[in-house]
Image 1 (tube, helix red, strand yellow):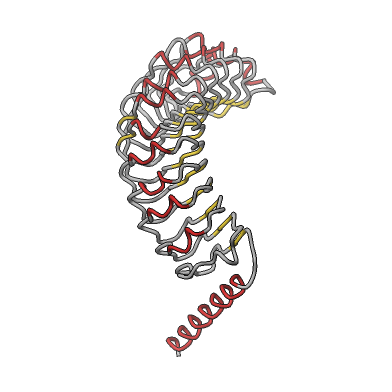
Image 2 (cartoon, rainbow, N blue to C red):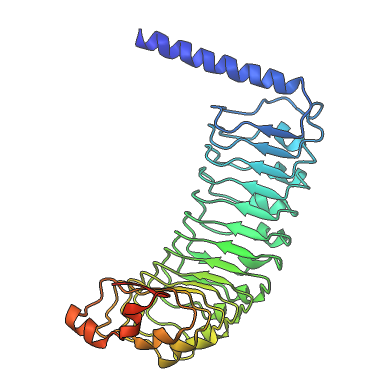
Amino acid sequence: MANIFSNQEAQSLSSNIQNLWNKLLTSSYNEIELQNCGIVSFPNHSLSKNFSDLNVVNADDNLIKALPSSFFNHKNLRSAFLSNNQLDDLSADFNKLTKLALLTLDSNYISDMWPLGLCRNLVMLSLKDNQVKSIPWSFSSLEKLEILSLDGNKISTLPDIAFSSPELQIFSAASNQLESISNAITKLRKLKVIILSQNELSQFPYALGDITSLEQLNLASNNLKQLPESIAKLDNLKYLHLEDNEIQNIPTNIHQCSSLQFINLSKNELSYLPNKFSELRNLEVLVMDDNQFTIFPEQVLECPNLKIISMKNNPFSEDLLKENMPDRILDSHNIQLFL
């Protein structure tokens, strides 16, 4: 009976899907919502007569293995959401989607991205959690790209072509195998966010110090041992994530990052902070858990806007902490202290 029920259930699902397609084929839409419908494929025949003005396709969370040629007949398509499917091969027909601006292909099985470089008007591209190992030369054509997310792939290096778009504002390649990045990244004058956490970087990419537009930098969970003084040139930087590295000291000119609001330095090997750290006048949150501090760094109390300090799991005893802790922080209503 279990097998019979299973077959009936499958037939019912297939029937429902067919009914859905029939409904779509007899209607006119500029947007299709098909997420989590159990779809295995798009219809092989063209939908252009019914969807000549199709702008948006949302087919996330299905079982789609390939895109038929008819998919690329929708010349007005601007947004395509195809994450959480089973796509592994991308068609060169992507060059037909001349108006495509937003494309998400997260959580598929894609290893070769070169056809996507043919979508010259892409503004946002997300390929998280795929099987990508390298950036294809075709990406040099993506000159309008503003957001590129490549988290959770197998990329070991970022060549010049990864940074071809002068419009790029957000670049994320967390959870890869990166050991280095190209100096070409310095050409990106509009770049605001870089996320390279959970990689294999052993040196702070010196080129990053020249990206003065940067507002958020995440290099957590790498193998960094020191920070260059060039980091001080990032005077627009607001959020800095350096947790889970091997950093032993902070550059004495860190105070020149005058816009910093949030710093996470947890799980490093810090035992002191530079005296001018107190000049970070916009700093609101400072996290330094799991380091090697034996004495509380009193200079942080001079940061006028500081609201939260966390220094859990540092090797100072309660007695030593009380002796070195200014009474004003213990009584303060403006600063939350976590030890």
